[in-house]
Structures are given as C-alpha cells and as structure tokens.
Length: 292
Image (cartoon, rainbow, N blue to C red; front, side, top):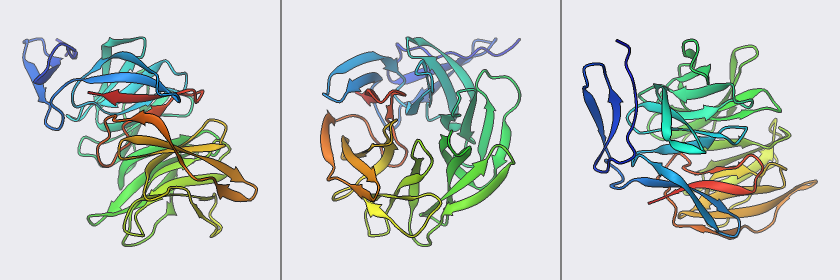
C-alpha cells in the first residue's frame, strides 16, 4: 500500500511524522529545541498574530510568492508544505533540507538530505526531483528580475561562497568567491541591480551591498555585526537580524549609501546559527517568525 505521511501537532517530546500501512510510527526527537514552535506574524510595530503550532525541529520557514503557503523542513530531512490558513494539515513534499520557492511559486528548490547538492521539483509534487548542482550546500534566492538562483557552496570547513544557477540554460557560475572567509545569505534586490550578503572577512559577520554585476564598489550596512539580509519589496530598505532582533536600514542607490540601521520591536524570536529562520511577507507589511 502507498505510504501516508502526517505529523501530529499534539506531540511534544517527539513529533510523529510518518505512518505506513503497517502502522509503523517514526518519531523525530526535538534535539535542539525542547518545545513546539508558534509560527507568528509580527508587524513593524511588534504586534503579534499567532498562526499556529509547528514541530519543535521546524527549520527555515519560507513564504510562497502568493503569501498563502509556507515550506519548511523538520530537521530529519523532511520538506513540508502547509497552508498558512491551516497549519494542522501539512503535506510532506520531499526528502531534503532548506526548501525555497521559485519566483512564481511553481517549483521548490531544496538541498539533499545531507544538506548538500541542489534539487528542483514542481511544487505540486509532480515529476521527480532534478539535480541541478552537485556542489551546493543550500539554495538562497530565486531572482525574478535576473532569472537566477543563488546558492552557497562550501570549501573546507568554513569557506562559503555564493554561486548562481540559471534555470533557463542550466549553467552555473561563481558570483562571490573569496578565499579563507565566508560569504552567504545572498539576496538580489527586486530590480536585480544590487546584491546584499553577509561576510565574516573582518572576523565577524557584517551585511554588505554592492552592484550586480560586481564593480568593486561596496558599502557596509550593518553596525557592529549582522546576518541574513532581506530586501523590502520596493528595494528601499534592507532588513537583517542580530541577537534575535530585526534591524532595518534605508538604502539609497544613487549614489549607493545606507542610513544607520534601526532596531525594530521584533525580538526574542527563534534564530539558530546559520540559516535564516524568519521571512518577510510578499507585500513587506509583516514578518513570519517563530517563538517558543
């Protein structure tokens, strides 16, 4: 008989994620976080609206371009899709990690179950996953303006670089590859003319913006550290996080400059080292975050 996959929001110490025809239940232990997460909308004034509960190991939720669905993984190499209007009936999509929507929402990109390789598959689950990069560690963004998918690679233990894949011609190229330091969390501006990312070249992670393609011009946006930048939909602001607090900086591109960042009243949310665990609504009016 076909395998049916579910997860039960009521579980606490372990999350029930799979039920076979033989009624064999698999449990995912919440190794990093001991309690369930509350997926929550938060506006710029800090007002919270709880959407619902997700498993303790939920990782890197990403909102679909139409704002109706969310994809995430649960740390056990399971990729899920759920309706934001009803989190209680998610659908297991694939075996993998770090899912991300295509610009039009018709496809999902995700890493393999070991957090390596890059795959693409129709978001309705049809067809087989297509391997599009062997050396990828995680997808980062699908730029509608450029028709490019940015992703990160890893050389050695800590040398992360930013590469791009073109779905149109299936080519790959390095965008930002600096030896002996880590560049990651790449985000193209909505018009595709600017690239934001984080780099630890100074000894700590900071947020930078530069033209794309690169010209050698660059500005530092963060003040005393920052990670995981995201552009506002109009390209006039850049959001990032530091110490589980969201910051925003106004960006001017003619000439390229940034105002001093300001902390938003959005703080104490769940944010582990590495992958961004929050997202921004398609209209930029609020943020999707997780609280214990």
